[in-house]
Image (cartoon, rainbow, N blue to C red; front, top):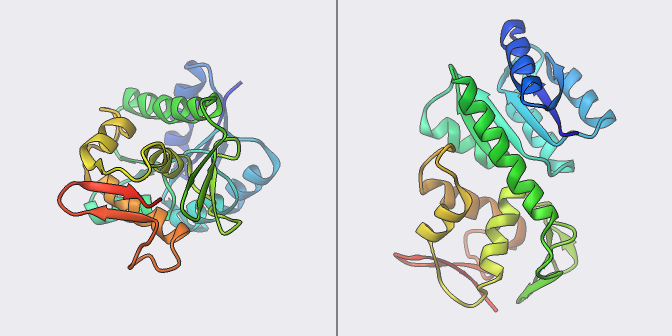
Length: 227
């Protein structure tokens, strides 16, 4: 059974999300604050986290960062903050998607299913065990990358993006192709997402993210992995 953790301090919204997702067949556990959420993460296996950013005992972004440092399940942020910069910060902190409040219940379900589907597809991946591109080793079984033997701790979306590039190592891949492959119509629709994730990946695999040697930019077109 797929388990979703809903972290939301507002009681009515928390109960609504719990009922909505349970009616879709998911097992739902809830938390009303930072301490409770982190305790649930440590003691249960969760397949996805729905995370409010404004919590009574701490910052939701800090929670996102702490979860991402140790776990790879999809994280979907719920927030009243609608500015592009707020969304970019959420994605850079480790979230896989960002839903703006107030939201439509069907939109939440669609985005949750999209993230779970991608995670499941990665689990079923059998076309290769390891991709190598220069000092980078992408391990399908781990769903992570290593550089000089050190794990990068990629999120599920970061792994997918790097996997697409690794299968085409040495060749330029357009931003449009990456966007079309990794983001559904239900998700935040902007090609700026690609740039956000490229920056996040570089921070994890490059010794100097501002002067990348592994994940390169092809000016005016897209990106390629060095071989």
